[in-house]
Image (tube, rainbow, N blue to C red):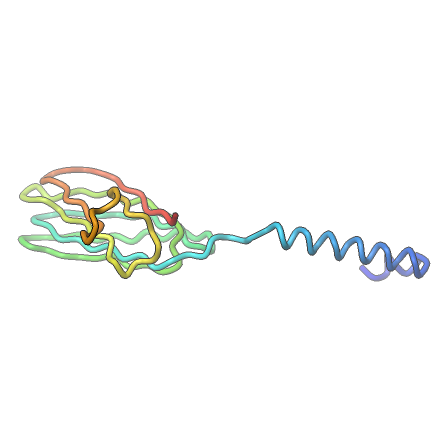
Length: 140
């Protein structure tokens, strides 16, 4: 790269170098880079055979596909992932009872995917038996 400037006179090379440096500085200042991800923790409690499958976008552009399933009475499970910026989860409640899905309060700054909870209430949803649903996870 420096060989291209060797043929220029001193003043011209300096002006070209300063122009290029200013261009790089402007581009860097305008590019905030990718969003920084947060930890997400989802908890599940339900009856019979329930399943939750998620596709979570990480801050490095990779996609994570965690899942959780329950069997039998009073089964519980969870999904925990780091560096998440957004995602979508498919929910299938068991045939014998409801499935409770909770966005754990230790999760990052994610918006409650089930609507704004009442003051002091948890961010959660209860899906009736045999329900199929989908919810999105996103940072504000």
